[in-house]
Length: 271
Image (cartoon, rainbow, N blue to C red; front, side, top):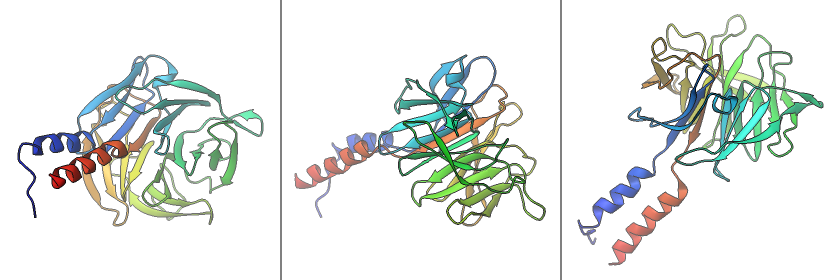
């Protein structure tokens, strides 16, 4: 086997280090709020967008990997931005259901559609067309649940939600939601002492619980293994203020950078 010349190794390492997954989070704290890019390993947080207006204060958040688009909402208003080192929010308009304005407290994205949950009126999983912003009900779950955090694991296509309440005999925490089979399955608990967690991102079998803040009283986000239900540790929260809602989305490694890395390795091997 030919060895890659040491001269080129730092360049490859640099590309690989840039192409890492990212946990995107935000809350609706008063005053200036920020949507953050959080390194899931080191916990380092970089601001993507800050403002005192609603467009920086997400209730729910979702990522479309096919178009590299980040979606988020504040109440009934839906926003989007190409994903990058900074966000450029576009107000897409008002979401509706049966021709009436509707809000959502959690968002996920799957197969070209947004999905949302509500914690008032008819609590259900709704499918939302990201172009027309029209929602339809796909699963009206028992109202004893209170699904705030919502996300699809893009590696499996499964939908998960965080519930602050549960029917008698059930537990608060992470549930797998089968909106086709009309059921939910408990997967992992809340950490001891936590009763209100509204942000959720899930990737490759790991669930990231994102608290509302502030980080002086809710210092951490939490990681759980979906299969075993066991804790995988914590990530420090960057939120400086208290939010009623928090939101999260997982952005995987940029495919273009991964491809660049592979092409670079192939070229060096040919040398």
